[in-house]
Amino acid sequence: MVASARVAQRRGSRSNASGCSSKRAASAVHRMSGARILRYGVPPPFEFEAPSSWLGRLALAQGCSLEEIQVFLDIHADVDVDQMMYGKALAELRRRCSLPQTAFAIAGSVMAGLEKTGLGPWSLATTTRGTPAFRYCPACLRRRSTPHLDIHWRFIDWRYCPLHNCLMESVCWQCRTPVCYPQDMALSKAGRAGNASQRRCLNCTADLAAAKPCLVNPATSSALTELEACWLLNGRALLASLCSGTARYRAEGVGTAALRRRVYQEWLPLPQQWLRVERRLRSDRSLD
Image 1 (cartoon, helix red, strand yellow):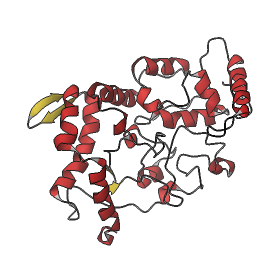
Image 2 (cartoon, helix red, strand yellow; image 1 turned 135 degrees about the vertical axis):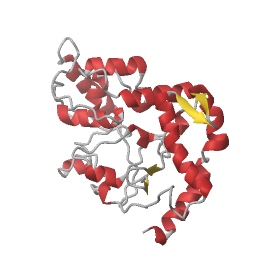
Image 3 (cartoon, rainbow, N blue to C red; image 1 turned 90 degrees about the vertical axis):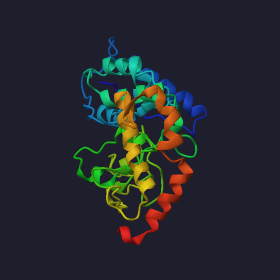
């Protein structure tokens, strides 16, 4: 198990303290077993879980800081963990954390597919500062005994939850803070209040599952045009195509590499196009 150390300060407030925190993290790594493999206190990943979500849970389970985990796994603090976690990087994560070969199979396939398409990081949700971010479904979080965030929730084109027929939420309903991981849940305001959970806003401690969903069903909703309904359904189809490596277009098979040419020409809206639609849907009280 990773040895506990005094938690390093967050990025953004680094100066001389950052050097001290790095030394503490390095010291913690030095005290690990020579094999550099975690064998105990490793939470099993969920089938659709994003690696960045799991890293936050791993740090909590190990009783150490996120920085210590990142140093141990040779993951730079400024990289998009989800985007990089496929192929050799994923194999190394499984080895270091004693995870089965099936761990993050879906996340790894999706990100490998994203790399092949050349769609680039602009397909993934980020904050205005470029920090990796998630959308979330309040109903999904409510029903999960162990709250976690799915890999498809990282994608800007996954705009609605097909299980609950509602739009995905982009920020905390109370303080409007984006949901970003990996983070030190124990060090957050929610963690200090005893609510270290991915169901909670780490900034204000609000229950994300309490957000009022914006209900919309692309198959039946009169609030959507036919094109808008297709956009919602095609967002799901894009994720399935990235995972499987193939797509169907006009009854013909389309390889992953060909998706880039099709996605924003015919299949999906540009972000600003959808933003206007979403504002209209959320202001339409008939959806309540």
